[in-house]
Length: 241
Ligand code: ZN
Image (cartoon, rainbow, N blue to C red; front, side):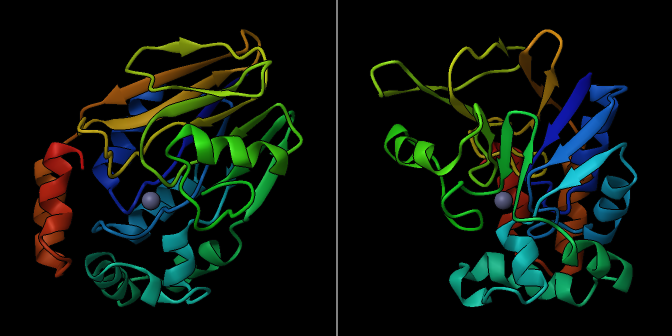
């Protein structure tokens, strides 16, 4: 079975379309949170995401803020502005979808969260120390996370230490022990590679394939500027920050 693992779409329709096209036919889609925030197309992205086969979807911090489940005060000015603009655009249908997003899921031997297992909405797992501290907070073999927008793998070795891998386009990885894995971001990649990121999990081979795909950034940037979302949310897309 082929599972498409996506995170942090951030209302970027061109990136989402490019990812779905590049991924090809899959049996199911797991989305790790933040379908809204930053970009110009929150409703279109929700509509396309919800149409995916056997979708399991999580709530991210931007989704929670747009729904008023958490305070916008914890966001920086430009991120908060994007959420305010999107609050004026978001349809009732989209709100109904956002409202039902889950904070944590366990499927097969995997735990799915947006931020981290001990703090699903807010914690960023960017390095081995934070990753190590989170291995006691889930009981499955692996944990899938988003939120940092950086494709990464944290592997717990037999000595109890954590090794960090930063996979690149085309890297295929097969776990043996426990791990935390981040597919990177569809709509706002941040590791100085502007290409949209995603992962395909093949449960028969037991492998995770990391992929990057180019998309039409110009078109998204134009719509960001027209929508009244701060300009930095468009310029950052070209450099991947
Ligand atoms: Zn995000």
